[in-house]
Image (cartoon, rainbow, N blue to C red; front, side, top):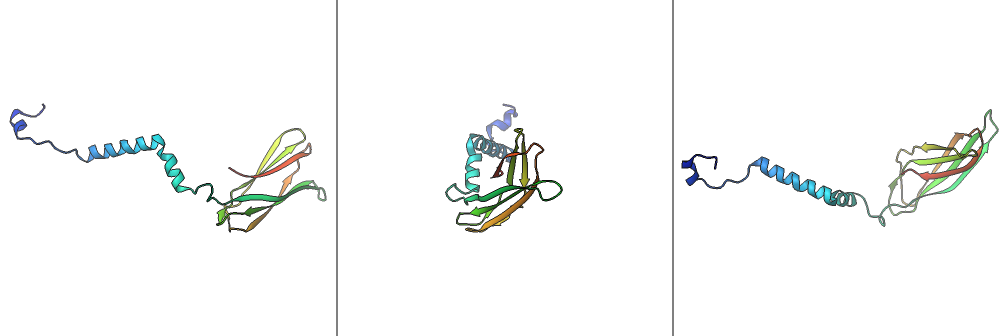
Length: 143
């Protein structure tokens, strides 16, 4: 329609150029991603839940040590790998609830140390005791 009349007769249909194909592939990739492709790639990149290493915390003991100048809350425990392969240890969060209901959270960095299958990793932490006393101490892996 926009070409001169003499070139219309001998003109053959041309294929799309590289920009056309790049745009088409980009649109298809975006449609795949929005339609749930990100979940497919996430499932392919990370192991299934039954293959995932099984890390657990056990032997957690907390006590208040008043032998020094100021009292300290001592928290000791062990992380076990019950899985069948080595797993990086996520950070450990220690939540201390005071008698007044306020919660203080402490993050124990593990450096994502790999724990071999069937192995254990001991941890210990010294924390300040809340001014109003300690009601509960909770230890869990960080999400």
